Amino acid sequence: MKQDKIFYVKQKHQGVNNFAIEQDSPNGKENGDMVFRHNLRTRSEGFYDVTLKVRESVQESGIKDGICVVFCPHTTAAMTINENADPDVVSDLLFALNKTFPKMPEFRHAEGNTTAHLKASCIGSSVMVVVENGNLVLGTWQGIYFCEFDGPRNRSFIVKVLPG
Ligand code: ZN
Image (cartoon, rainbow, N blue to C red; front, side, top):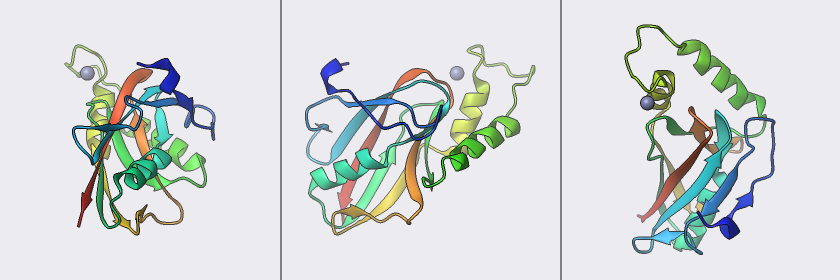
């Protein structure tokens, strides 16, 4: 990864939104005009607010009206939309997910991270947001989160903007 592309998103909450993010090309585009890949290094399990990066990709696509898909290409991480005003909300989400999916001796997966796979499937691999006037149509309290269930790891997420 190119060190000079990294910037740090302001930490909002200890252990939740503290991460480094980078783009793998100067403008973040790949495979044509409307696909953007963003790389991030997660430091621990947690919810990482990537709304700003998604918003930037939408603006850079030049598409004014359409659909934005944000996809997580990992089996132990996920994407979700939830409250970004009170950081305790995503802390509580993580706490409850850990209570819901405890480690069990019956798990067979040799890597030992079955709980991370469970949480990833439960939350889902992508979110979709309407684009209007070049902006994401999100609710006042909504943010887009990359959900790390198995960090620290080098991760990425993909933003695809479709006109329509
Ligand atoms: Zn695994």
